[in-house]
Length: 533
Image (tube, rainbow, N blue to C red; front, side):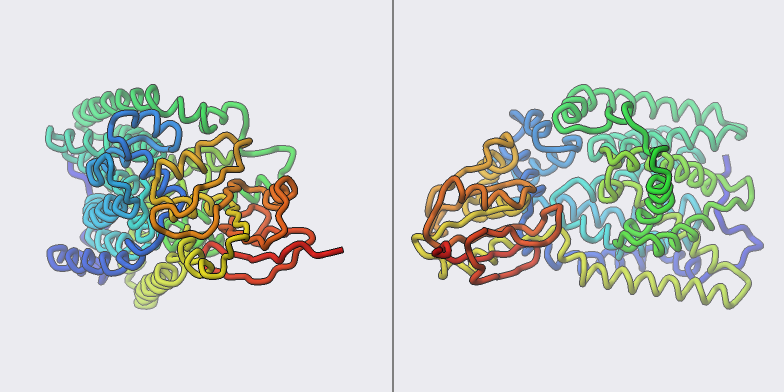
């Protein structure tokens, strides 16, 4: 089978096609630049709730790992296993786990280049590598100790291997595709679903090919292995996770389009895909920007010649995956509930964006070619702005900084409360440096066990008073706790500024705020002793 690429002989080359002819020179530059943009915050940023929980799953090694993953995660165990290999069973360093994501993020760049080359041609390969280097989604999640970067790498691997398989099926490519599918299955459930849609797209795109029997035999082998791995992961992990935390099976009881609320449902249906487009490319959930990205992606999907096997595979794949995304995201359910959980779709979207821009760059019109260059530079500018100015504050909770700022001002008779969702976990880990203790106190406790007191002077931090943990989304918890445990001294409330009602700090009736210290993602407010009548 001889698959054709996007650039036929009568089509003018774009500047991107020219640059894409030199991967040996450009790819090392991209990877070096990727390290530079990913390094700030890689080790210095304090671990947040999900990273602490990830470290908890790693501790203890393989003994009891299945139980820990089921209790504390919504993903398969792949990242946890890699983290155990990196960190060992006893080393309690969540930041060290970020090296798994960093390696995955850097490997994604050459894989995206090769996927773009196989599907569309050299120009798309260059732009795909460029976007994988600078896209805020790829950058930020390369320095987070969670499976997102691994999931995006696995999907990029599947795209590359499947694109090769439908063109030149042979044992080596079959084995490579099986390996890519297994990595996807163990990284994220969303990545596994994207992979399943890709296998269906590969079958559809090869229906009219002369050697479709050979290709379908290869795809069936990949499908059998994939199905067996998926069934094992579901039996061991997924069904228990869904039962414990809620998730995908609930889709049988609801629908994404609510006929009783046509306006809200229609608005969601029209805007959510574009928000995903924008988030996957430039890191901003912006509908209009996403619509522009979507138009470029649609340009890549617009049919040219039926013989173009790569673009047709990508076209069917992206349409199928977006349909599945709408179904799950519309219900707000895992694995596609929420834009952040849809990151495994990012490689497909970025490949389409690259192909659309390269197609503009191949135009005979100088104005259109110039426009493609301008749009590319503009996207790089937006990506740089989000990467360097906005992304450093994503999921950032500088609890330790706040604690250091107020340590000297906390008196022995003061009361210190930790409120919010991420605040109690971050504060507990800052005091104990113990992920097991932190997760046991703040993550796995039943909702009615919200009032827990830490001992004093933990791990040499010389913290002057005990800290009361009030984890949860209820902003009234501090006031309710003080009503049950009255004190005549001052009260400090450290919260992680993540209450669903807004960014307003918890208030204490009968007391006045004296001092407020704010840091990224958290704050500390000192309240006066009770006012005298």
